[in-house]
Length: 191
Image 1: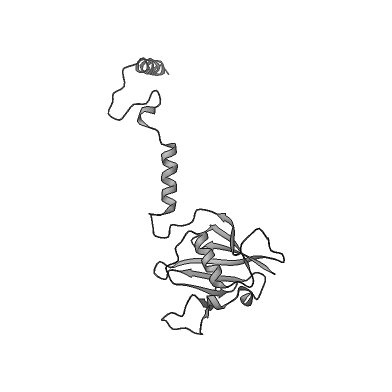
Image 2: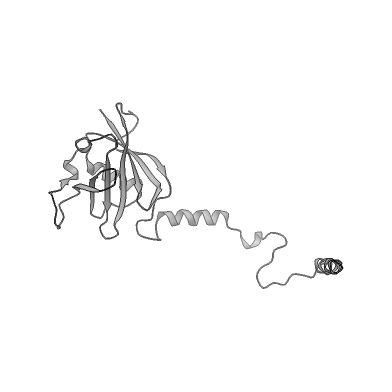
């Protein structure tokens, strides 16, 4: 059984991507669900794939359902369309669009075809994660909670102020440093 490995790039930053392995007999609905899971998105919005060429031009649509819009050609449905039926070349590309209001775009590219499946994996499966996924609903999300945890971990507590630093508004006690600066300036006047 052939295993198709796709790289799914986030359109806004191609350093953010996920590699997903899927059987050629599984459907685009399976790929859709795996993409959402790998990017930590929910499954509440409309979605569609477009067949694409090397220039990322949109072709035939493979949709989650038939939407209330004008189609040039009837869309294929994700749950009825096996992955292998839409692969026409070894570098096959698709455009994946999710949430037609926010308009998330992902570029889907076939990067490898394996003849043997890994018996330890349950397909489809995300096998590689690169970059921090965008937050689906803006600033409040899983990414922000991870960043907050990191900030808390490395944040200095007020009692742990380093020696020589003071709180804002506190005046530092006079030290011999001021006298050294004055002496140093007097020596420079002679040049």
